[in-house]
Image 1 (cartoon, rainbow, N blue to C red):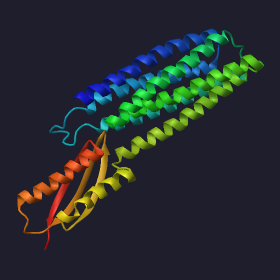
Image 2 (cartoon, rainbow, N blue to C red):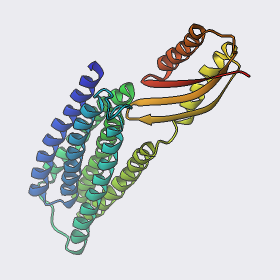
Image 3 (cartoon, one colour):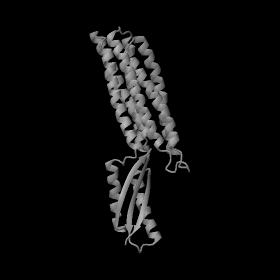
Image 4 (cartoon, rainbow, N blue to C red):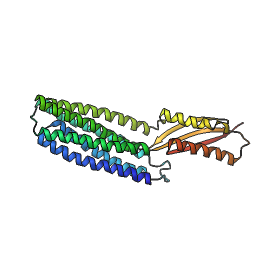
Length: 288
């Protein structure tokens, strides 16, 4: 519950920061007439929706296993990450649509100093919040928070890009740079969305844990190799922040139930200490 509260608090921080940035970007976009700033406001709007989804998903995924969901509610985070990725695709399409209109009919930019200030301040705020989100996401192994952090990290780059683009327009007078920068922002967002959706979809399909984590599991099993004859049928998957590990061990037939229980207990203890948030299921096969 403590970990859940921590994840919920940091998710709410993202909601607050995105709401404030949307207001500032919309004001700056209207005052300046910059399509790249409006595109950033749209991007932040999608980020806000994603942050709200992340907020509710971490609350839902923290619920304990029940009769209907014996493996817990962890996949809610994976599903929310997939939805967030699809929302980013929508944002990118909207940005490109607006940018193409501006390419056809370029407009004059006003209040460029205010526009640049808003973009650079936005980049700084998102950098601070994304670092906090990434820190908690890694420590709590939360895919929903990691997805939210990825959104804000991309916002850092796009806000800096828009700010630099407006600076170049001010220096050169080439207003066509504004929609060009907006399209570049959209392409970066599409790349972000693709990576996010792919990772989320892999987890929904019960893909195995990353190779380095599987290697850690095998290392732990081999560290206890003197306690049993062999191991086989190793399977791993992830649901939310929980790692599920399933394998068989062959034990000498003369071992007592308590001795087998102690072997399994030591394996589970070491795996949870090394990988954290693990649910280990060990099947026992007696030797012939």
